[in-house]
Amino acid sequence: MFSKSANYYDEIYTSMGKNYPKEANKTHKLIQKYVKSGGKSLLDVGCGTGHHASLLSKHYQIVGLDLDPNILSVARKKYPKIRFQQGSMKDFKLNKKFDAIVCLFSSIGYVKTKSGLNKAVQTMTQHLRSGGVMLIEPWFSPDEWHNGRVFTVHVDKPDLKITRMSHGSRKGNISILEFQYLIGTSKGIQYSVEKHQLGLFSKKDYLEAFHKAGLKVIHDPKGLDGRGLYIGTKP
Image (cartoon, rainbow, N blue to C red; front, top):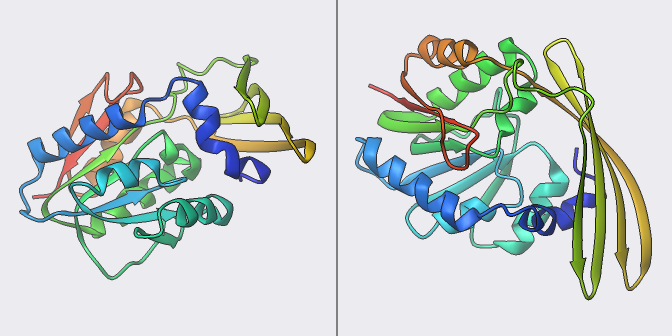
């Protein structure tokens, strides 16, 4: 998924104003509000470069999980003390249960279909202790997606220049994002293209997935940064 851009992922989203410390702090407070299992273990599903995981490791024993080997390579180099596992959120098996499981920054969208959503929530629930809490930050719903949107992002550092242009399209209830990158360093300028497909799920879809997995669920329409948040607890 993330080819050459994996090494520049954090720079790109920092330039867009993403506030990882603020989000991690809110995540911690929500976990403490709802968790009843009494432990301090946390699984970060779709962990990306491990930025959230690193910040949350101040409070929890962290395991990060992601499907993309390129992004995991970056995470392992940046945060060697954290354990990172490769696996799909739909069917991973870690032989361990956690007090908290988080799936942030709309990573859940990569399951693409309602069936995939149900499988992912079920798999995460199987790794959750009784009294544990699960936080899932959703991707856009079908009604929220703006087809044809074009967007640009720029990173302007003395030794690094990046321009990323994106175009959004749609096929049924799958959103398609095409990213085109120009990355300039002292070694020269690189050009690359990525295409990402994420499922567009309704509030009903998320609530049903939680209920099918046997979780009690609350929908916070604002969440960590305006995307909303689904908070599930395991009896």
